[in-house]
Amino acid sequence: MLRKLTVLFMCLTLCWTTVACGSSNTTSYQNSNPNISSNPIKQNRNQVTQGQYPVQQATYNDANGEYTLMLLNTPAGTPPMYSTTDLQMASLTEEEIQEGKTNYTEINGNQASLHIKPDFKIEYVHNVTETQTDPQTGRQETIIVRRESNFWTPFAGAIAGQVVGGAISNMLFRPQYYVPPVYQPGGVMTGYGGYGNSYDQAVNRYQERYQAPPAAVKNRQTLRATGVTNSTRSNNTR
Image 1 (cartoon, helix red, strand yellow):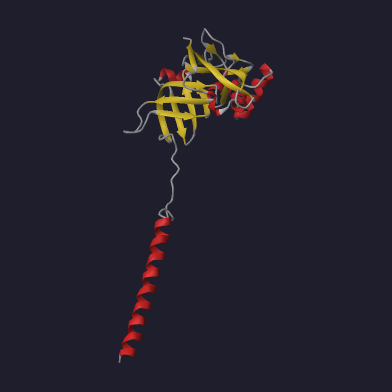
Image 2: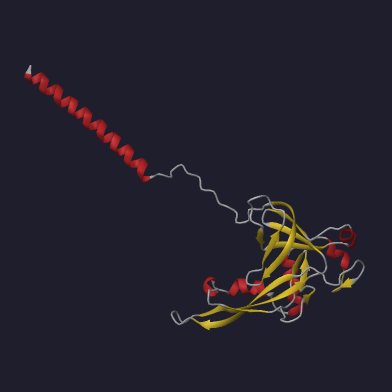
């Protein structure tokens, strides 16, 4: 009888140990992989992704060719700022202006078209760069030493039937890509350095005209990510 009880006790002990070990392994696996079934969502920094909105102001930065638009009448709780490097532009027609049409943008994801009056001024942020030697690595790097600011009116003086830069200004009334002219401090910059149905075409026309790439194209290739610091001086020209 004693032998039977001993065997029964050993069997129960073995079963309990097996169950306990199995439970411990399962718990350990779950705790070490808390996000095994999670699905991370990549958020677009522009919360406005579709629609047509009036534009209060626009800024162009030649460090990377990015436009920043301040929109009006965005949905409640949605930031009014929209940033993109993929922006087409077109001039409002005389008929649209007479009908009271104001400056606006048509947004489709990260691509947008900006429709503006000929006298609409885009703030142009110019980054002055220098090539310096990094004292730690001894390598030469291009960095931003200061910023300047001016205004740019792409379609100033453009009216239907007028020849502008060798092209009939009617072309200005449909969205195209435009590259600013060479930056100049002081008075408002007018016109454009290049245009085209694609950004590359606009850049090529700019290079044919000035025998050099646009500032944004050059800066994207040469600027190091740490070139802009809080100590960068700002020289604003109005």
